[in-house]
Amino acid sequence: MPISPRLKEIFQNAKSVCVLTGAGISAESGVPTFRGGGNAAVWKGMPFDQISSARMVRENLNEVWEWFDYRRGVLKDCEPNPAHFALAEWQNRFADFTLVTQNVDGLHHRAGSREVLELHGNINRSSCTNCEKRFQMNAEDVPHKPEVCDRCEARVRPDVVLFGEMLPMDAFLKAEQKSRECDLFFVVGTSALVYPAAGLAEIAKFSGARLVEINPEETPMTGFCDEVLRGKAGEVLPLF
Ligand code: OAD
Figure 1 (tube, helix red, strand yellow):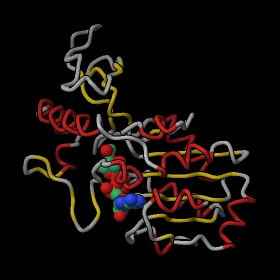
Figure 2 (figure 1 turned 180 degrees about the vertical axis):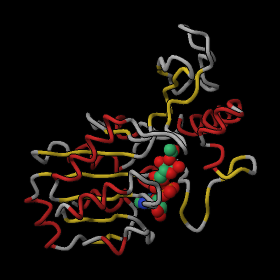
Figure 3 (figure 1 turned 120 degrees about the vertical axis):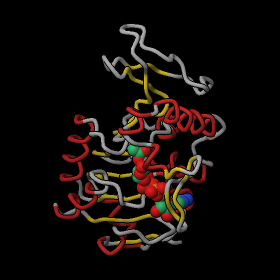
Figure 4 (figure 1 turned 90 degrees about the vertical axis):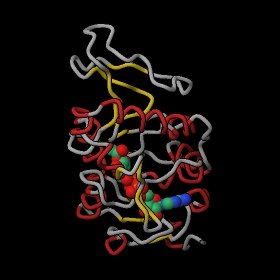
C-alpha cells in the first residue's frame, strides 16, 4: 500500500493535523474490535451494545463488570503496535497535532503519545456511581477493585462512556475545535458508525480539511474521504 507522492507532500507540508482512531488501530495488538468482517461482538449471547449500556449499569452492574474485567484481562497481554508508535512520533512532527481516540485501552499513552483526547473514557479507571470519585486500576487488578467508593460507599462502575451516556464535554469540545481548525484529518481503524465521535471527520471535512481514511474495509465515511488507504493501520501509518 504505497502512499501517493501527492499525499506525502500534503502530509509533509501540513501545519495542523488531527487523527481520530478507533478499535481497528489496536487490532494488530490483539485487542478485539467491536465490528468488522461482517461480525459484531457478543458477550454471553448479548450484543456488546446491550451490555455496554447505561441501562445495564442500572439493571445489572455485575454483568457490566464481568464484561469489562474480561476485556481488561485480554489487554494485560497486549502491547502497542507500529501504528500507535507512528502516531506517537507524529506529535513531534507537526506544529499542531491532535490525537483523538474512541479507544479505552490506553495503548496510545503506552506508545508515548503525551496528550490523547479519550472520548470514551479509559478501561483502567472506575468511577463512583454516586459521587463520581475516580479510581485508577492496574492491569493486574482483574477482577476490578475497589468494589465500592471509599468516600460514600456506593458501588463503582467502569469509567467508560456507555451507550446512552454523554461524552466527557471538555475532551469532546477540544476535539471538535481541533477538527474544525486542522488542514489534514485522518480517520484510522474506525467503523465510523458511532456518533458524535464519527462526526468529527465530517466537521473537519466541512471546515476545509483533507480527509484520509486508513482501514482495510469500506465504512460509511469512505465516500466522503479525499484519500482512502485500504490496509492495516500498523502497516500503513509507519509509511508516512
Ligand atoms: P469498530 O469495532 O466498530 O470498528 C473497527 C474498525 O476497524 C472496522 O472498520 C475494521 O474494518 C477496522 N479494522 C480492523 N482491523 C484493522 C487494522 N488492522 N487497521 C485498521 N483498521 C482496522 O470500532 P470503533 O469504530 O472504534 O464505544 O467503534 C466505535 C465505538 O463503538 C467504540 O469506541 C466502542 C463501541 O461501542 C465504547 O466503548 C463507548
